[in-house]
Length: 155
Image 1: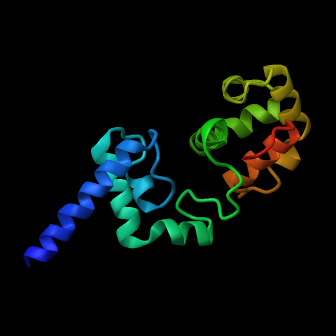
Image 2: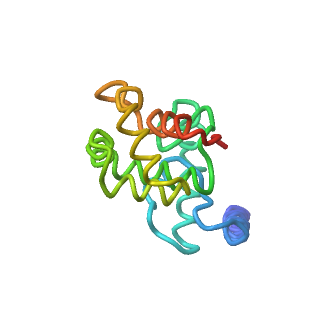
């Protein structure tokens, strides 16, 4: 019993050290990352990583493209991750604004991607049917299409 407790404490200690060495939002994708999304600090990050590890949801998510994971790994980190996160939370409003070629989501996307608003507005309106190729298009597909149309290399 003492060995199990010691192993648990040691593992938790390593997780705490690892999470403090990472940048904010360093838990990746998976159920734990989704459950603790939007929270900051050491404890939520450790809980997210622990949940991902205990249930294997990160591996499952990457394999199946669920739980906020992209199996192709095309959109990761930094600006593109912010763009994807923004789209996940504003997909309907972006579709509305893109169809008109104007609106606040276009200003936000231009700011995130460091692209002129006029370019984002023109591309989204002109290529609306390519960006939103179906009624149930996935957010990752919309993000990839926008990045391609804006000639921004996916990381």
